[in-house]
Length: 460
Image 1 (cartoon, rainbow, N blue to C red):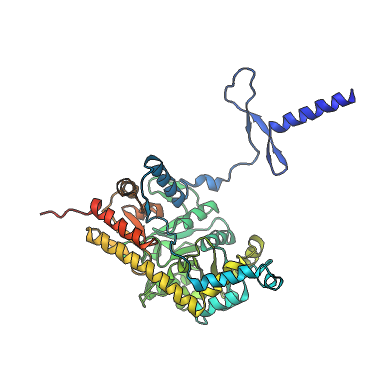
Image 2 (cartoon, one colour; image 1 turned 90 degrees about the horizontal axis):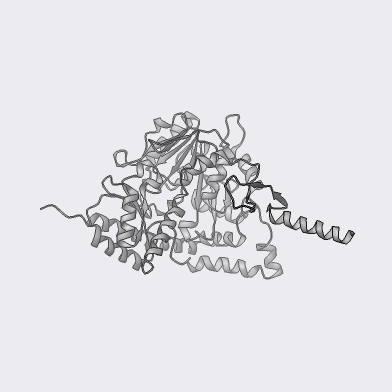
């Protein structure tokens, strides 16, 4: 009967749907598995016709910090009573200062009123609210950079990947070695790498600029003569080394001579106390013709979870054909980004008030005191250290030992998480990075645990 045929049709449709996977509204074709199955059983395996991105296939491991977190969780599963202290990922721990919270509170409460929603609600300008851009230019760039060159975003890490999209694939990239792993990983994902050398542990078409104690943590730039883009971080993560004015002058001169563009990561510049170490690349004459600078409120004010940053793209920066880099960046951001949270931007504006700056300086001083405690502890234990003065990281030499082996030993014997140096590049092997982001009592407890287990014995 027609009713019976309808029931059979509906039943067949439901069976077909149950054997398919759906992505959006398109069913994914269910293909038979080549694996043997029990007699009478039908095994299906979801698949699409889309090949995996070959750039993603080149990546050799998971991103560094989730990998460390996975190992930490495995340790906790085996040792549920362990009291883990993290000196690993650089995540802030202290409360955001009250003057800054007050700015965000006012913005959040304003969203509940008609007048306030008109000010803080809805889509804002994709490049950032004008008062914040003006305050950033005035507070950090002393008239060298104008507000229209400042682009507010949800994080420097995010902008590092967006810049790769801006430049496109097939570029020769240069990075400090060791350096923040996002530079290399994002380069590989965006098609800059042509392969991987298992012997050197380096991606091809990426130039690794070795930074170590022998060269005062400033690389031989001659190796980057063919590089299109140079990623440079000062103070460096992980070594904590801040580049001097003379060194940055040489970097800018190299970029102008070779026609390359510097992507300057200033995420930790507020930690610099050495007057000979610039806090911005734009303190160097001519840098506005060859450099992009990115910075963030994450380590300034504890905004790691709030997500607020800025990237400076100068008007004078041009592509080889004379086209404005800033114009393309504006076009890319307006397509891929709807602007940072209005509440977070209100917090950023509060950071830049006199009261907010004073509170941030006090917070940074706390973390720098933690760094000094860690640095002294390792040195008292007999280890050579770097950084920890103009940066919140202490770079500790373990005399050439495998850095993952040291990381594992410290975790197992002390219930302390550090970061293995080789996670930042091949030149980082033999070192660990200790982060100063932590409660004071945890920092002091960590030093006691480390002293008991890892103090070097002095030969008689």
